[in-house]
Image (spheres, rainbow, N blue to C red):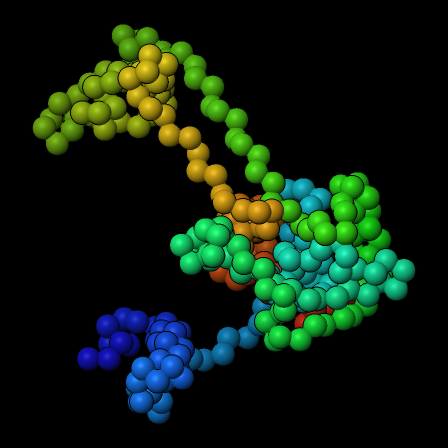
Length: 292
């Protein structure tokens, strides 16, 4: 039975073959095996979907939906340069020549599992981009001016990153007093046919009610246990980063919320932010200098 008969899409099959082929290629080069099982294996055709091109008006909505000036500058720079994410987030102040507006792409950053990192860290900086050749190109005056202003405001040095991941801990939710359970009604009967008064622990646990009153009662109960030392509250997980911006964090925390707020009427949520902007916009418009 083939993968497509099991419901696997042609794109997934092709991606799996690429990964498996890379493994066998390494094994063949290292003389672990003398055959390459992936050679000559055909995969189902993956149709090319037409690119979605956004208009200047749509981009303006998306630009205004971004949460802060740093995110806006990052997206603008991605559009201006067309850089890959690893190249974009590895840019440093010394890579830009202010007078000539020449930007040099000389490195890329890769996020890895710490167990595969020599020092147990999260990011590895390669001293060459993906194509293994340095690239130089001239920025427009408007984006160069914005980058220089960003450098001045943030007081960045020559070796500092243009775009830095800043962790801002979320404020702890404030608990409020729950309503008097006597004044509230009963929950819907559970699988055993029993009902409980809203705003009680029994309604939350046995009645499986998740209304605001039952959740407040349970939250107050848990807060009391933590304050008395009976429970060990788990602090929010902190991303291990040396300042480089994780791609998945930007996608989930910045990009997708901005797309939802902008409500462009087209689905761009599955694409990577820099690729989406540069491909979709540069293919449809000659310049964005007057739109943002």
